Image (cartoon, rainbow, N blue to C red; front, side):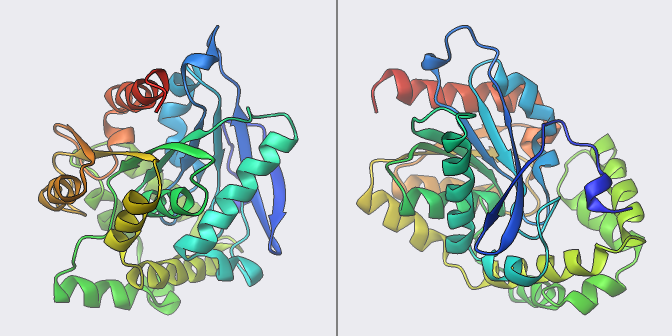
Length: 302
C-alpha cells in the first residue's frame, strides 16, 4: 500500500513549499452565519496526517470553515528530500503559513485570523506559527502539548527511536504498543485501525521514507525548548492560548500541563477518562470545547 492510496475525507489539493509537495484540503462550513466563529486550522501530531482529525471535521464544519493538511513527513505530503529540512517547529510553521496563504489566495478559505488547533507535536507547531505570525492567529488551542522534561531512560528511548534503522526494524508489536500508549481505552477501535494501516504501509514503497522522516522529526522535537516558545509568545503577542488535556494522558503528565498553564496564565481544560488523543477518544466533548474556546474570544473582540 502507498500513502497516496489512503482515502481522505477531503478534496485533496497540493502546493509546493521550499521544494516539498504538501497535501491539504478545506472543509467548507455548513453554518448559516460563519462570522460567529474563527476558521480552524488543524495541525496533526508527529507522524500522523490529517486523518487524525477525521472524527472532528464534520462537527467543526458546522460552525466554521476548516483547513487541514499533512505536515511534511507524513500522510500524502513528501517524506524525503526537501521535506526533511522542514520538520523542525519553525520550518513547520512556514509550511502551515504557506498552506493558509494558498488556501486564502484560492478563495477557498476566509481571509481572517484563525483558531490554530494542534495536537501533541502539532501543538508545538501551532506555538511556532503563533509566534511567527500573530497577525494571522487569534487563538491557539493546544491539545496534549508535548514538551515536559523527560526522564533520562525515556529520553534514551526516544533518542534510539530517532534513528530510522530502529523504526525499520521494529515489528508490528512495537507499533501496536506505541499506538495503545496514546489511548486510555486499550480497546479503542482507532488502535486496531492504526495497526491495520501500518501493516499495509510497511510492505509499500513509501515506508522507508516515512520512518526516516519520523526519526528526523523526533530529533527536531528533542532539540526544542517548548516552554521557551510559550514564554516568547506570551511576552510578544496578544494571541490567546488555551490548553486541552486528557485526564489519563500517559505520554505527557497532566500535572506538568496544569503547572505550565498556571505559570503562564493559560486556560486549562481537562477531559476526563481519555488519554493523549482526546479529539479521538472523546470527539464530541473535544469538538464542543474547541468551538467554545474559539467563540469566547471572538465575540469578546479579543
